[in-house]
Length: 295
Image (cartoon, rainbow, N blue to C red; front, side, top):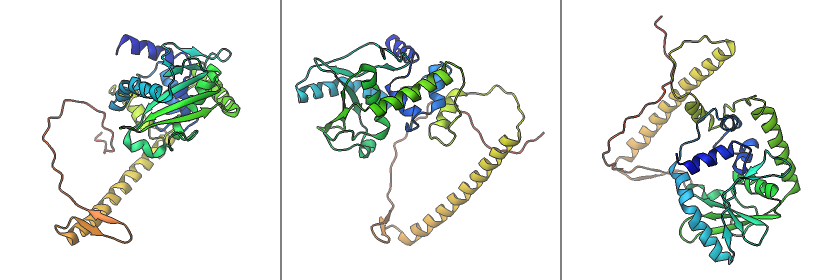
């Protein structure tokens, strides 16, 4: 990890930033309140960079240049942590600031598979739902009346979404952030895990990457969840077999045909996919499954 990146992550531990608010409000599909708590207290390693996050950093300057050319405005980068003058637990790291204006810019490099979550160019507030709190948080911290979100979808598809400050959002952010920062982070009281959240399992894998070899005893509640997990696994396996059998019926009927027309606009397709040979790099992971004890 670079020194600059390390300093940035440490600064983020000093308060709640714009990208944290969606997690507090329960609308972030990539993170949970418990994970945010652990990150702020330094009890879990930062998420490793992905191709998506790396691409976002690389494209940031390119998108900013496109916005400047399109709007005729001068943009500047602010390489420091901004903090609310009254609520010091609210911090901000904005992508760009419009020179001579009380307006900032949030930059998003949108992957093709997520484009459906965004509205038309110039449509106010038409950004993906889990990004909505971020510019509102920045307006609150900087006391700005407006903020733009620039989203780049590839090619010449650059969209600008204007956002206006909302006093009701200010109250929601301050209240939720205050409670979480003081009652959880500073008090050392972790929030309950969101067990049905898609980001919970990856979080536990990062939090407990190995085993210590110990054997621990279960209680009644844990035995209940063990039964639920085992029963659900069996049912999932049964349904997989049913699905496989049904698919075999379709394939037998099709023979070498490529497309089977079904009711309405539905079709069932079969095609040959050729994969190139590759070498799997050495890795390790934690395997968790039910088995019968031999003791």
